[in-house]
Length: 358
Image (cartoon, rainbow, N blue to C red; front, top):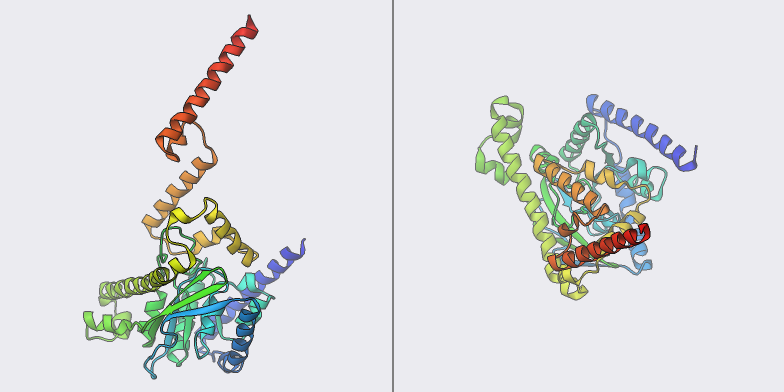
């Protein structure tokens, strides 16, 4: 067995133990750990991350508010866009207090520098392939929030590698946790242009305002009473829609403000192999990252699944180009030229064959 395979086997065993411990803590209402450690390590990791940023020749720019004024008596959920591996570190540099992190990178970060960084703060690792573990991850997040701790989460759950979606479809756990714990949500968008990072946040989102629009009942009441199932669904749906729109708007503001500066003004200005190189560079930043996981772990409704099936079919056609399907991928004039060339070649081949037979 190779070294990497042995390491992954150990990581899988450690993850199973971790998930069982998580259940035990929630079911027995045991003390949640890591808060005092986070307060100790937070200033240290900020100094280290700042030094690393400078040594790498990187810069962080802020659009709108670096620090958002929030109610002092309510916990904060930092809900961020997700584009590349260092976005967690750069966003963490932009806040002034430690927070509990929700992440799905236990195996890839096991016994690594990233794993050490995760362990400097309370990190709730989730198994995206386990419904049970998702349930207990959510319960642990709510407990941390109810005890007055801030949390950091990436609602898209995976890197946004879409070529046409500003923000992927997002899971509803962020807004549900905010409603259940009386937290407010601070949205953060991040983009990267070479070694320049741009962070954008503006104000905060209070899901309780949406709750009040629908009912004067508490979320706890409608969350525990089966008579309010549809009401709860409608509230969560609208909150989730608003959260995604806010993340999208913040991202678009970065594009508008920085596209001219970095020359990314239109798709026409990109090289043909831009996307392939972009994906390749991302994967190189995170050894062990699996693109299939990216697809399988993101939120998918039925329309999303149908769209992905269409895209996979198109990719298969691209990888098996012939004169019969070439017209799908080029303009008519180029298709006609290619078809004529092939027909002429086939005709010449037939003539040569006849001559040889004679």
